[in-house]
Length: 336
Length: 285
View 1 (cartoon, chains in turn green, orange):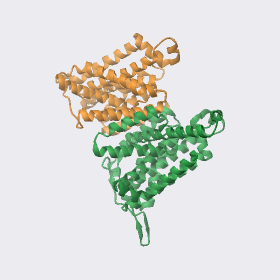
View 2 (cartoon, chains in turn blue, cyan):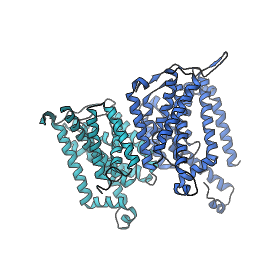
View 3 (cartoon, chains in turn blue, yellow):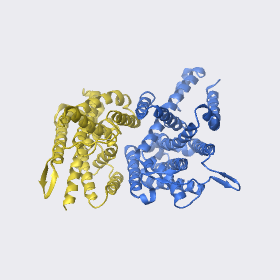
């Protein structure tokens, strides 16, 4: 069996598993794990927004929690204060996150590398402290609790997140849609332009690419992903809180993305899954699970600097090389 | 007016302590090109070491020697074991130091406990200063911080090791060609960075609380000082730390602490955007 056939099989298995989760997971390990998997999907979208910026455009953002928080608050304020129903509130959350990404991005993408990392933290800290002080709007650290509006309400059919299976499938579909869109994006001319900017911004500008505009577009798209994640998480937990805008949340997303494998589509999912499952398993037995999370993070960057998916890809490439092409031809390949 | 003076004075002293910690961050940043997210926790380890020394020996003063020494050893070990293997990839260092930060916080939570504690100042008296009774310990803390800062700059400018550190930062390849053991200089730098943060922790322990999360608030402040002072500009870092803390102190007399913090963050984004080379470029080298 060829390598690509194996990979296709794994994809089919993964898809089948994800669809079967609400039936097989409660039977195997308990229904609690369905909501853990839903949470993993949500957080992997936040990790994906870090990955889009770092892996594909070369900008390390330490402030993606800001847009996650705007997604959350857009939904919570939309439902609780403005009395919106599900879809307008979700839209408001995503729009708020994208608008915020556009406004902060206009300033932030003028800078690169260290400076970019730091200004994104600074922006997220400014709004974190603003959210803490403006309790009338945000509820501060306590946050806003809201009652869940129904997602679909056509005639007699009413579905909402109170049904765990429906909640799971809604999150699964949204996440799958986002990852499919990213897959398309990375293969499009725009995605290739992102890679050109990442690899060498001077050359990219010499061949006529508008580096500033490309970075800004990527920043707003990353804001979109973080906003979707935040909006979903607000519906998932039925609340929004300023504590999710703190830089620790951004930091965790960076760790998940890099440990999973930067510049790979599935890296953020793998990294997020690894860390959340470790956390859930260990924290029920031992309260000091952070020790394990920290150790895993350090071990991965020491022994698998390309992340888990990078390690897997190298392994697959080596097998493919040994199986088919003669060694000389394989060495000539320059495209990663 | 008295209140303003008090807040400005507190800000000044807090700024000097922050300067110590930020200086450690700046040398690690400048020499190793590492964004050290665990640096706030190095400070926190210092406060806990001060508490531990006080508990085990009954003397707070011993901590001024013990904590930087333990910090130095820990720093050297961390550099050798964790930082050395990944030093070529700066993005990875962020993940590694984030992991390190989690490990340090959790280790302290296991050994010291989750509840914040307080240390009474070893000097209880007050000094009458410009019409207010000022805590003598804070003045002592300022003196220690100034001495340590001065000592570090003398070390950097006038000793062989200090010259080596500057040389490796300036041009690593040439430094190696001249026979400077760059690898060992990196270990030394990281160790000194940890020791400075730990010393800052001891000095600050009786002023703040001893808490396993104590480093989380310190870290952004230190980064602000490093950036506003200008990357690689060590005297600039010290000046920026003091300036920021005094400004926040003065602003606290008219607004609440969070608003003051927001104002300094806005100031920092302005500096980043308008003068990314730092406020003091050209003043010191």
